[in-house]
Length: 266
View 1 (cartoon, helix red, strand yellow):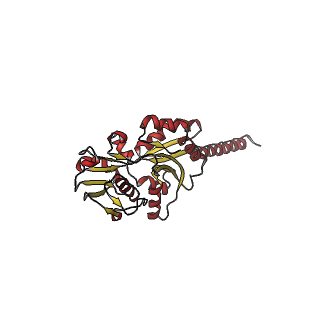
View 2 (view 1 turned 45 degrees about the vertical axis):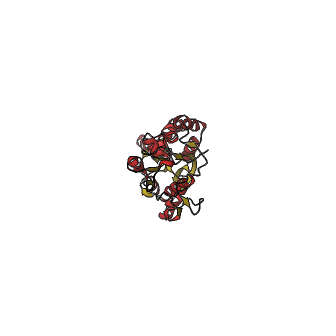
View 3 (view 1 turned 120 degrees about the vertical axis):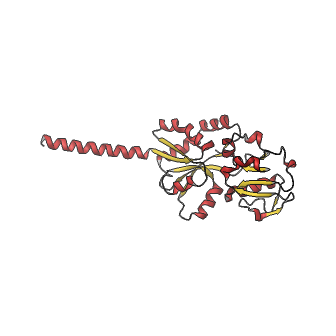
């Protein structure tokens, strides 16, 4: 074999090795969409754990409840971490080609009711304005919470998809406004009561345990999920992320940082 031919073969083998290395590197990199608090914070916490496992994690932060799922379906990210099962079920009804797959449960964020005007439920006056999230799963959840705390009654207390049409009695003639979940902390001083998702409450420097008039208990079925598109769901890197999110270290991190406002679901 001539020297020139040997050089060409060596160069070709080097290119193949680099290409294989690039594929392996891509396979060990995850891009996860998440809302800022607590989801992105928890993901940032597990980054060093994953790095030791050979997985590079990029966290793509969004402040709404639509883009993380849309980007997962478009495969612009490998998965997302922000939603619960009822939200995913409603999303799949609207998006017939949805390819999101549940990987694991991580935590529960109890939904709470807050007021800048009143100190107790009994102080809420007749005709008061109550703001709740406008996505179907969380609006139903808010109505159930209001019913359990005596503000309204519902035809069926087990209907997690309840709408305002399912209100049986509204003794205080409350005006219920459905608004985008992310905006609720910002309009708190404009309404009598707002039912706010814990992630947005924490972002707004509200303490769910101290500042809420009432809040879901830890038995809430709305566990937040790590979700992936179907091609990433069973990848070794995604399995390593799931294991990290369900680790004792994460359980301790949640307990220390959120002081009961966020509860592990594993």
